[in-house]
Structures are given as C-alpha cells and as structure tokens.
Length: 532
Image (tube, rainbow, N blue to C red; front, side, top):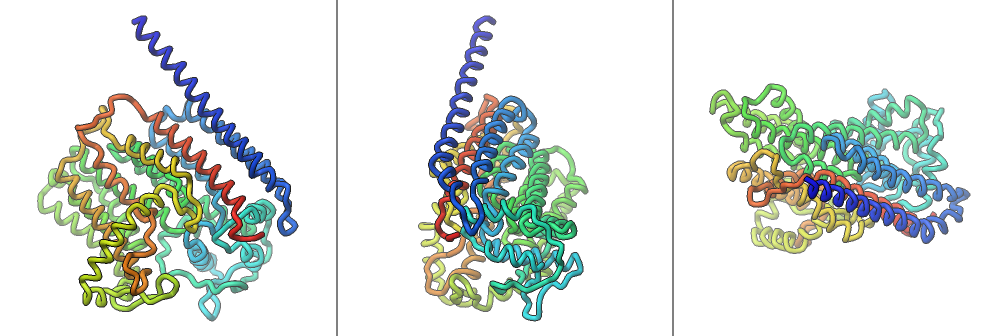
C-alpha cells in the first residue's frame, strides 16, 4: 500500500515536470517568433493601415493558447471524449477563423460567390446580372475585391482588423468590378450554415469582413455539433474520430466556405450510426434509418463520390433486422435514395464528365470515359503512375502539407506526430467492445477502396488534361471521410491498450495544433506572394 502511494506521488510529480516543460517550450517558442517575425512586421504600415495591432493579436492568442492547455490538463480533458472535442474544436476553430482568412482556403473564390448567390435568393435580392455573374452589395465589392487573393499576407490581416466592425447601410447590388463570378452548379445543401450566416449578417447590416466571418463561424458551429453527435454515438473509436476531426486540415475545412467541411461531418455521423447498429444487440431503430437516409441524400447530392461510403451498410448483421429479407430491402432502399439524389442534383454533370471533355487544369481538354476505354493500356499506366507518385503526397497533404492554396505546410515533425497520435487513438482499448469481425472489416475496406477509386476517377475526368499520364488535382483532404474506415482496422485483439491514454491523446493534439497555428500565422505574415 505504501509502495503504491509512493508510486502515485512519483507519477504525479513526473507529470508536473513534463507539463511544465511543455508549457515553457510553448512560451519560449512564441517569444522567439514574436521577437524575430511579429515585432518587425508590426512596425510597418501597408496602404496606410498600421500593423501595430499584430503585437496585441499575437500575445492574446498565445496567452489564450497556454491558458487553454492548462484548462484542458486540469479539467476539460477528464470529461467525455465528445465534450472535450467540442472544447478543442471551438477553441482551435476560432483560431483558424483568424489565422486562415477568407479566400485562403482552396477554391474559396468560387464557393463564396455560390454562397452569396443562394443568400441573394433567400433574401429576395437580385441574384445574378444579365451575364449570370453573382450580384453583391456595393460595399462588399469595394472592400473585398482587393482581398480576393488566395495568398493572404500581413496586408490581409490589416484589412480584417481595420474593417471588421464596419457597417454596410447601403443595399445597392452590383456585379463584381474585378472578376466574372458565376455560381457553381452545386446543390445548396452543402452550404446551408454559410448561407444562413451571411444572410443574418446582411440583415444586421454587417460590413463585408464581419459578414464573411459570421458565415465561417456558422459552418464551424455546425461541423462541431455534427461531429459531437458522431463521437457520442459511435460505440468504439471515439478518440480516433475526435483526432481525425481535429486535424489541421479538418479544422481548416470546417472554417471555410467549401462544402467539404459539412460533407466530412455528415460522413462521420453516417459511419458512427452504422457502427452503433453493428455493435448494439438489437433491431435497427427507425430513427437510425432516418439519419442514414438523410446522410445518404446529403453525401450523394453534394459530393457524388461519397455515395460509395454506403457500402459499409452491408457490414450490418442480419440479426439487426426482423427478417433476412428486410436487410436487403433496407440496404437497397438506402442505396437507391443515394442514386436518386445523384440523378436529381448532379445527373447532367455526371453525363458531361462521362461523354464530353471539360476544361480541366490550365483550361486544357480532359479525358473522357470513351477515350480511355479505347486505350486500356493508358488507363493501366495512369493508375500505376498515380499510385506510385501520388500516395505519399496524399498522405502529406492530409497531414498538413499544402494547406490553403498548396503553399502553407506545417513542419514535418508535427505531421509525423499526428500519424503517431492517430494510430495510438485507433488501437483497441481494454474496456472497449471486441473489434469488428473479418467479414465486417472487409466491407469497410471495400467501401474505402471504392471511394478512393471514385475520387481518382472523378479527378481524371474533371481535371486531368489529355496527355498527362497521372491523375492531377487530388488532395489529401478528399480522403478525410475514408480515414475512420481505414483506422478502425487497427482495432484488433493482437494489440490492446490497457492504460487510460485519453488525456495524453488530447494533450498531444492540443500541442500539435498550437504549434501548427503559430507556424501558419507567422508564415502568412512573411509571405511575399502578394505585395501589400
């Protein structure tokens, strides 16, 4: 007994020392960045805008970051996984709102006009001009056109700071004075939070910066709520799902105007419900069928390739249905719902991609299914070359390389740390239910392979120019919905974690995110891609 108490006391002091070292390193690294990068930049002026505010911004974020770590260590980290996730998602999500400004996310220059188009329709405003270009408020055009740049710099932060609290009292609608901005032919479902956010902001006469920040905040709140439900529902792999949803690329998507954040969150919820049905020894509930049906509609209508995630439905045991025949009817009906959603929302696009070349990378003509079928050897070579040269790139961009418009990359050591944390979070716990059976895992593997193939095929037809012998345009973020299907394979009786490691995983994720945000922010400050 005495030895046990002494061991506990030793462990407590060891933990205190480790936490002290981590906090000191967080402080010293921030001080170094402040002196070397933030302080010199804060003495400058860009287009008449003073940058001295950068000092206060940086100090505030560092202080909040360190205090947030202490709160996690001493209290929040002991709560249920889903509650800890909400804390981390909102804390770091708010940081990404500031560090990764509007237009810095991939393709955001096309998603924002699309959201504005739907907001115009919702508010009963003129949506497009006679040429089909999106109309927006005159003041939005004046303030945002100089910031419509995918490479933000210190000048972007200055525009945010000096215009954040602006009000827009004039509702005159104009076409873009810089670019032709036509809305994407994409279902509004993927943009619901963003549409509501900027519509409310417009009703409250927010200026353009505040308006677009509110739209980003709404998608963050929606993403956090959906993933919270997914983690709460999922019977195994709660830490695994939380870590995936808190990856830098995940939160960057969850604070952008792209529909990818919503699709990722819905796919996590879909996977969580399927796993709950598999693990709980009872008949599937009507409420679960409703969630699965809605998720199939959403995934299929917004991003067609994720329809094939529905194949994990075949992993549900026959015992979860009143009759064996009902299993086939239910799964068939859910898949049919997804197919109908595709036909209703994306049929013309799917047909165009299949039979007619499109303007892909650098506006060059792309492959078609017919052309590829006439050259089967070329198909084999393209697949081989893509797998040989692309897989490592997919993994690195999934972990934080090439963020934004492929020019921001978090350090390799942080990427490697994320891999370690994800694997640890995916291992079988002693207190968890047994791992999936071999047959159940095979359906998860099949769904992951089919989804991977669908993503590659879509980018081959939509983006890869004729003559290029590998598939262009595929990014690691597209594979986020597949990650739970892959990582759950690590749950096996061969390796069982007996010690409680939830707190360590949370702290590791926190530290990685803290340093990732410091790096991204200071990198943008130094960026010379766009002269202010």
